[in-house]
Length: 220
Image 1 (cartoon, rainbow, N blue to C red):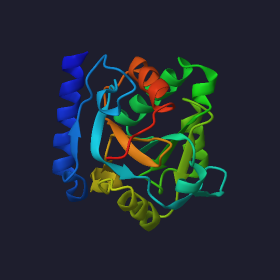
Image 2 (image 1 turned 45 degrees about the vertical axis):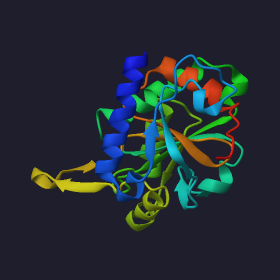
Image 3 (image 1 turned 180 degrees about the vertical axis):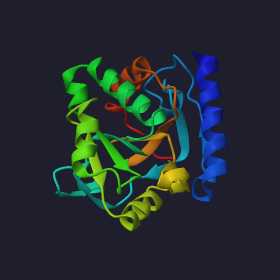
């Protein structure tokens, strides 16, 4: 576990430095496994710690019911997992969603009640609210799906300091998107202290969510 966690942290740091100038200044360090939870710097996390942490962004998109969703306001007081993607992607997006959903099923109800999972589509042309809702329901009906026009979604990515998704046109008018495939975890202080790459297992999520809902980050 220790070797895998450290390698994951290195992968995250390398990706962010390559993908986004806005995030390249943030160094990522892995917490020490099996250390006391009372000390934030020694907390046991399966993701990578972000130093300095990233502030929860302010943006408003539209949820799958057609209602405006103020991200910062409507996730206040919750551990919030934010990720960007699109259902047509066959690998990273469903893997993340399935692992999170399974991890949530492994934790007590009081922990689940303190977590919101927010998925922002990178593909609003194909991801109608109906399509997005049906896809999310395969994993968990409580997952929040957000969409909007291309400009609004791009602005939301920039606000969250996530590298903006880019389109690659293929044959027969098809296309695919390259986008950030990590999950940002915002704790109740409205800061993202932990980031998760692909490969995080349901057991990892169950482990970390139980810590995140009770975490109190000290001021640096």
